[in-house]
Length: 221
Image 1 (cartoon, helix red, strand yellow):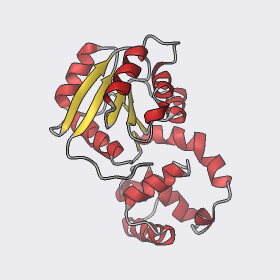
Image 2 (image 1 turned 90 degrees about the horizontal axis):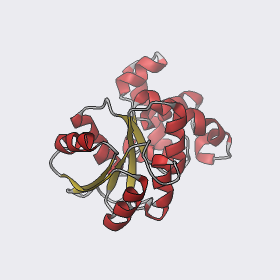
Image 3 (image 1 turned 90 degrees about the vertical axis):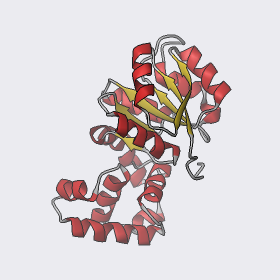
Image 4 (image 1 turned 135 degrees about the horizontal axis):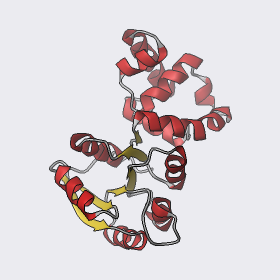
């Protein structure tokens, strides 16, 4: 995985079959995020992404064309670019099957179209930096699909963490704030901070962004 710093100017390709939505999304993105191309079908998307090689692709899950595989088919068609171009799924669908399918195919995150302009800009920047980004409820689908099997694998680093530290680590890696983690686990924010500190120390990581990448690499997010 490429852990290089996020460029000041992030290039993006928008993939959605609704031109009006693409226009609105383009207008909502922050300065510093440049839309270098657009596509409305599977074939157009693969062609444009391969040609332009953007930093990030905002990818709708359900697209016309191709063999009916939608966003997942685009990901498979661009598989040679996954180490340098990040794909963020953006869809009206919050179905577990859609989420899991595109993540299995290589997407780095999945957010719904109810997201605000500032939120999508933040998500683009986070994905460009190597983080995984999910709407909180959708992250649970990914954890259900990938987490249990991965945690059962032999991993000496995981064995260093207590059950509670593992719970905290997963939530932090999924993008929860300390306050949200505290509410989810019925513990104090100070206790969350203590657990995060212990997790970072045991895994020899510097911050929550590195923690997210660590979790993604082990497919436990």
